[in-house]
Structures are given as C-alpha cells and as structure tokens.
Length: 476
Image (cartoon, rainbow, N blue to C red; front, side, top):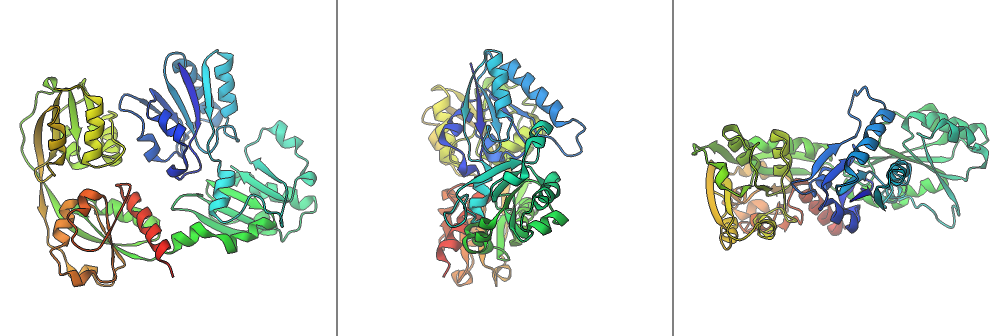
C-alpha cells in the first residue's frame, strides 16, 4: 500500500488540490494535524480510521514526542493500508514532511507527496501582499521560527534579502526583529502580521521593524509575518479583508430551530456579524419502537436531532452495516456521540445523500432511515427505486410564528431549513424590502416565494460565503 503525504493548504478548504481530495475520499487511515479544516476531514469514508495528531492545549507532550508517535503510526499502517498523512500548508515547506517521507523510504514503504498551497504565499496573497513585485524586490527568503539550533546558528542575518516571510515565528519574532536591527536594517521597514490567513477570521496588523522588536499585542498563532517594503502594498491591495469588511456589523436574522440558535450566533459573532435570533421551528421528541438493527444493511440519518434521539434509545455500536449522514454536522455529531464514522455525499441534501447510497449499496438492501415526521419525501422516493426502506420518525417539527418586528432594520435573513422557509413566507412580502435572504440549499429555496440567493455549500459557512460574495459583487 501507499502513504500519501498531503498538503491541506493554508486554511480555506477550497484551496485544496483536486488530487488531495480524491485521495482523502478513499483513505483507510487519515492522520491529521491541528489546523486542518473540519470539512476536509469529513471527506474521509465511513470506514476510515481518523487519527488526530495535533497538539492540544495544555498538553504535556513535546513536539518531538508527538512526531515520534506519528512516525510509529506510519510504520504501523503504511505497509498494508491506504494512509493519508494530512498536513497544513505544503508538507515539504517547514512541515516535517521530508522527515516523514524518509521514515517511509528507509522502511521500504511506498509513498507519494501531494504538494499543498503554503501559507507563506497564500496568506500574503489574501492580505494583498505580492510575494514579488518588480518595483520592490527580485528575491525573497522564507524563514521559520522553529528551525533547529544547527540551522539557526548558520543564518547570516546581514545577507538575507530585503523581503522576508516568516512562518511559525510567534515565539521568536522579537528575537528575529532584533537580529535584523542589529545588522543595520531600517527600523521603519514595514511589517505585516497576518493572522488566520485565508479564513473568515483573517486579520492583518501593520507595524514596522522597530515596533515588531518591542512586541505586538494579541499575537496568537497561526500568523505569517511579512517583513519588507512590499508589505506596504497591503493598504492598496487588501482585497480579502475588504471583502470580509462588507459584512462586519451587518445585522443578520438567523431563522432556524430554537435549540440551534446559540451555536449559530457564536459563529456569526466571530466573523463580525450582529446575529438576531428568530426561532421558527421547535423540536418535539416522539416515541418509537426500538428496531432490530440486525435486519438492516444500512442506517441513514438526515439530521443531528434524529441522531440525538435515536442513540439515546438504541445502541448502534455493534451495527455492522453502512451508516450514512446527510452532511458534515450530522457526521461530526455522530462521531462525537458514538465514535462511529459515517459517509456523506458531495452535496449535503437528499439528492446528494441518495446518490452516495445508490452508488454504495447493492440492489435490494434493507435501509433504516431515521428522520422527522415532517421531512421531505425526496430521499424515500429516490432510495425506494432500488432498496427496501423502513422509516422511523423520532421527532416532530412544530412551526412557530414569524415576528415581523425582528426583521425591521436587518440586512439579511439566513433561512436554515425548509420548515423555517414555510414559516417565514407567511409574512407580508413588504417586510423583506432591502433585505438579502439566503437559503441554505435548494430544498429550502423551493419554499421561499420571496427573492433570495442560495448557498452552493449547504452549511452555515456556505451561507456566509454566498452572502459575502453577493455583497462584494454588488458593492458600488
């Protein structure tokens, strides 16, 4: 078998390569680091062994100890498994990918390297800072704050080029600034500190070399530092944070289930929105007969609420069949609650779920679908063409009245489900003037009789992306 050492890119999942995604979707073992976006992990198949190897907060193990464990895992699984070793950025740029490749080579384990977009060029690009510009530089250097003592002592600070990009340098950045000042660098040399580059949390702090030497507040990794006159282009070319700024302070109504509001609000606040809760549905558990799981080939979950209520009464730990979930949230919740991995489709709706099930199971398979009594019949209709489907209704949806007062003065409404859409459209359409309505996906969109836009990725992050792109394109 083969160990694939893959770069996951700088943070934005859309910057991952097509080859990387293909290999992740067929992995048997996935060994991943701390800063890997959850949506990327969700591409792994249900039978994939997921192994987190990032350093947790307050962990006593050193980086060397963790690396030793990673090396042991490569040896343990590399001979007979399809192993994906998923690393942030590019695995061969300050990522110990070379060391891990040598472990494989020295142990006669076949391996491949899949390059990723490195944060050293991606974060500056998203901050409007070119790596090179003929009026500013013709050469640059990339440094790391985590270099070995042997390499560190070999750096001649006086001979480095004017433009420097520094990765993993938070703990050493004042020392690096002092070294540059000590060899005569101009204290007024522009410096950009780019936090969480390429993500919704990106923020660039500008200073100069003298200020960097004194220290910058709130310097928590991940940060890419750019030192040099080219950093000054941030003020003119800062396209991504300008795009993010179009949404900062926007009042957004979250139309979703009552018990899911808090989680959504916190996420929206972290991106600079002012969320307003509008619960449009409530969830009521219902009694159901405990099924004999041994008579089914597959379990299908279409919501977090369904999983929550089903696993409270049914032990699925010994189930030997396939388990499918409608999207990343359901997959993550099932994994957290039971430790069981599951399969999701490329599209997080009934059609996408049906497509992956139709492709995976043999004709005539017995399927148990766990859902609400109000769920769409689309999934049942699609699956019934080839399978015997049994449905269990584990909860009811109670529609709540829309409050027109909550909508007044808002900029956008995020409609999180078809049930919420049904409640919302009962209001007079005049209430929606000058408000951007965003549907989480096509199934929700079907029930919106008011002008709206629809997310292409059926998640809250997908809705935020769609709204940002809409604001950016409509900006005058």
